[in-house]
Image (cartoon, rainbow, N blue to C red):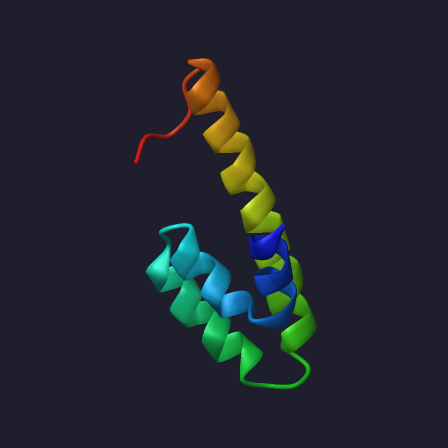
Length: 67
């Protein structure tokens, strides 16, 4: 829940919390424009959902990328 709030308010920070710093820097560059804030937030929420799905698959032992 906290990560979702971060994804909406500070999208670039979300990428750093899920271990994707290069995407975080790209998101920060996108977010620096007022128009880019909304796409950055959408991108961060999407990546957060992917991260949660991958985490659940790893916990279930069904594969998925490893960290």
